[in-house]
Each structure stands twice: as C-alpha cells, then as structure tokens.
Length: 157
Image (cartoon, rainbow, N blue to C red; front, side, top):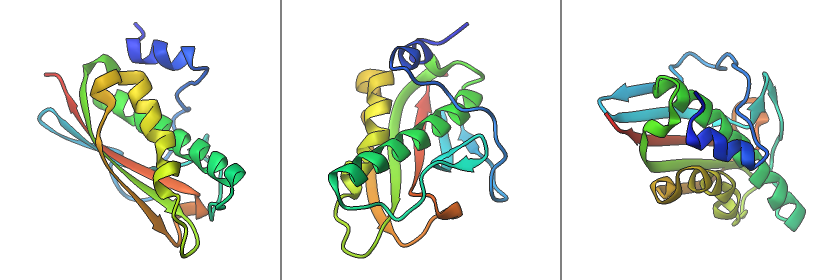
C-alpha cells in the first residue's frame, strides 16, 4: 500500500531514490520512542553525488543548490520510510531540519537553498511538515556534495 505522502510525491513528479550504502560508519536513523533522528543525507542518487560544491551565489546557482537540497530531502524520506516500517503516513510532525551548504566565505543564501528541502516536507505533510530549522554555510561536505540535510521527526505510535 502506498502512503498518501508517497502519492503526493508522485503527483509532484518525484520518486524516492534507490537504496544505497552510507558513506560512513553510522546508522541512517535512530528511533527513541516516537522520535526519529535522521542522519545527514547529501545530494546523492544511486551512489553518485548529483551536485558538487561550492554553491554559486547567482540565481541559477541558487536554483541548482535548491534542487540539491530537494534530493537530500528525498534521501531523508527514504530512510524515514524505513523508520516508519514502510508507512510515511505515520509522520506526526517534522520537528527540525538542519541544512548545510557547501559554499565560499560570505555566501548569504543558505536559507534560500535549504528551502528546497523545507518545501518538499511541507508539500508532503502539510502543516505537519513545518519545522524548526538551521541553514549553515560550510567549507566542505562528504563527496564535495553541494548540500547536506538532517532531520528530527515525530511519529504516531
């Protein structure tokens, strides 16, 4: 059975990625009761980084980086579906996103970039997709990825 969230995803013309092996020695998520802590996901698809950094401070560069953030969100959703035993409709609230943008010193568009992930969570979960958030510029990410995003989500029991 497909969740309503996955149906919304398909209507947006998006899909969850294929499974992949994490780049480091960590769990993709950790549950503590109804709370799921999702490890940071880079803009990676089928084992390859889709967008490398640093993000460019131009309209086209921001658009590209937003797409990278959206791919991070799709990777988070894939792991979240595992944490929900295959049912994304168990998401009660997206509590927090942490966003990291590979950029040069002085880059001030990190919030606009991470909106690429935020907007997907809101599109899929409505009011329950709104969250607290950080958006930070950094000098490097794994695989020279342009963006990495992590999340904390509360599930229904």
